[in-house]
Length: 374
Ligand code: MG
Image 1 (tube, rainbow, N blue to C red):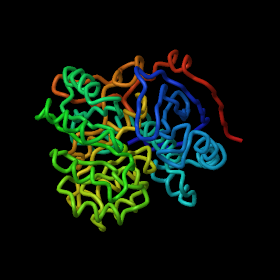
Image 2 (spheres, helix red, strand yellow):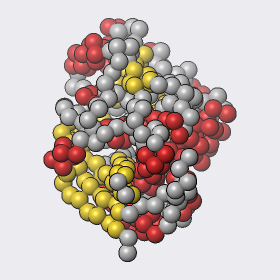
Image 3 (cartoon, helix red, strand yellow):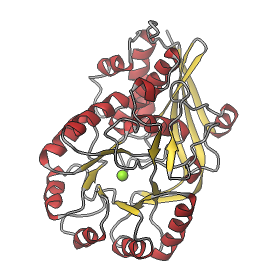
């Protein structure tokens, strides 16, 4: 192991806008391009990256690109530039007093994992003692204007090799859509993600229970673990929580309350890789399967997700897909591609394992700012 401490000489913040292959529609709205904040750490010749999962609006989470930028500039960068750290977990200890900005913290924490891997010459999945070289993928399909349109999309994805499908739903765009898929594709592994669009008393939630879904994700409001616990008792379909789980403590509480039977661990949402590992460990101890959820990340963020999904408890197909599912061109040279049996290969390169396509990154950069030591 490299005995060098993790020191950072400069931090670059870049905001990018990457074209999507097609608009992505969820209960929260429609995205036409992927806006993201990147953190780029430099130490000598080494360059490490982090990708923030916050968006420009505050629908999925209170955090936004603007809030993350502010927290990184004012609070996180001074910590990083003026201390040396033994490991990424030390950064979390140094930021314990910062509350409610897990996406900002995760961006920097993941970049530190990338840097640590590059300093030691190993991949993040190796640092994590991951147990698999490939992970099961799952394609998420946004809300379509009709069940027929959904079937056309789905047919295309199944031809590409996807074996598991996650349908975004909202009231009125749910039961008929799920029934159509079950009728035409009876063997596909099918799940739905409601993004907190339903109320407890909505009869459609009970109707969805009849379609042998592998899970229904975040049916009710993010803050309401009690309601999820009551709903789970009425459903045979496992409830999975996503938006409700902002931290390891949220995961512990949800499981103890019986509010879910599966957890969607998104490293970029829960504060990074260390906290994802903490949630994973608790879930394994309590026989709760987990999967790694994507946030429409470009290749940098996706690489961290894939590395985390190599941990042994990630037994449900991860909500991650090939680069071209979303992007005509990804930020990375070695784009994620689907294998013939519906999997993604875990990068074996050092750090996050992917090589950034710098000219393309420059071409999609909207703004850039460099922070250096005083
Ligand atoms: Mg979700």
